[in-house]
Image 1 (cartoon, rainbow, N blue to C red):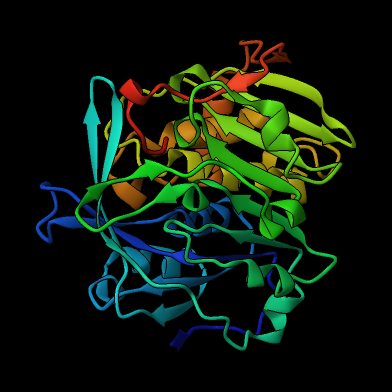
Image 2: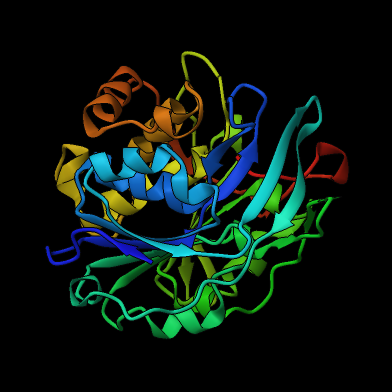
Length: 330
């Protein structure tokens, strides 16, 4: 385990394993991925004091992408794993198909720096169900918690195609104040009310739908109390879809705990969907983590898109994709 700069105050702590995503364009044959890497780099580049516990196998521990996180100011703890997740993300006309070549190992709960335990927010971002339910007790009671649901909704077999696991009760989801999930992570016809039923009143659910934008579901005592549809922010080009949903969720989290970063006065705990959509649109314009934007780029992109009325009430009650549309993440 490697520690870097763990004494300063921290705004957000991210937890999860990196993945190695197979690509022919990289001389290594892979790029470093995983929701935790994209989220940590996003919040750091947007201006939050960021810390991250990242699970890495031997190869991932030497990845040059980790220097991007360090250069952005992320306080980084690497937990070495005997095996890390390895995926082949195949883009097909029917959507993304993921093949798993290694499933990884669970993250152990270490002794964490005191500054991390005083953080305003935490973000748990499993990529292969490596963040178990015991992590709910690690997050301090008063901290805001975001969870990326996608890594908990995958059944993985080495050498096999990733398949969907139906959503079910989860201590982490019940504890979370903000949950992100892609429509690709759930089966067609999945009820928004079903998903919201696993969450506590006052929480928010973000359902990303790629080029169609997505939904913000505000959860009440009896299920969804409000559903808003947001329109996507247009990208100039699309090079790599990987990490767009993770960047979107991290930018939404940033806007909720530090509204001023979005450049306007907003109430805390209200996600700025235009800000988050702008961040996600920039991430697809380059390969891997190199395309994660900074605050200035996100603000410029949002201004460019400001004439679009992109958040409105929605009557949508179901999400998901058909089996023919493939499985994977935005």
